[in-house]
Every structure is written in C-alpha cells, then in structure tokens.
Length: 102
Image 1 (tube, rainbow, N blue to C red):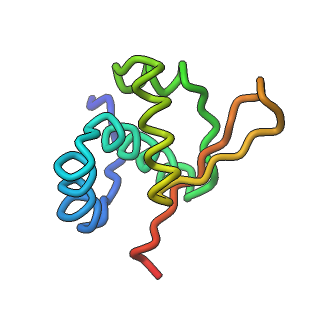
Image 2 (image 1 turned 90 degrees about the vertical axis):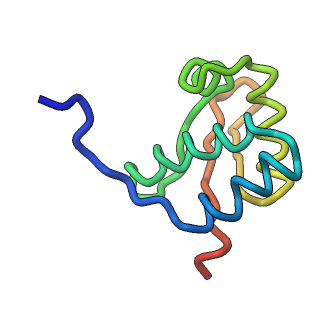
C-alpha cells in the first residue's frame, strides 16, 4: 500500500515562472524549496495558515535553520507568504499567498 495517497495540484505559475525567478534570478533555491513545502501543507489544509517554526521547516526540508530564516525573509519580501506570530517566542503561522490567481 502506498505511503502517500493524496496528489496535490501545483499551479503552472509555481513551476514555470516562480522556480526560474527564485532559483535563477534571486539565487535562493532554499526559498523555493520552503515555498513548495508550505504550499503542500497549505493545500492539504484547504489553504488555512500553516503553523511551523524554523526548526520544523528545517527538519522537513533538510535545510539549516538559518537557510530557512533567509528563505522566509525572501518569501515575505516577495509577498509569497504572510507570517504572523502572537509574540516573539510563539510558533508563527504562515499563509501561502497566490497572487497570480486573482
């Protein structure tokens, strides 16, 4: 029996434009990897915000915490995610933004 049963559709924009833009132009493949991971989690949760700490994201993607932090900064700056936190030590929630779907 397969371990994964759910297929998540990914927008053409994410594969055709965003990958080239983040990996090629910004030279931040870690940011693209973090975005794909958050995209998958958000899609499974019907696009509700995803609660994930730096440590959680680092373990899930195989990146270092500093690489994840840099990636999240880029994704917020490019308005691909919106991050909120109750206070400085709370686990933040990340909302995946898909501006091309408007």
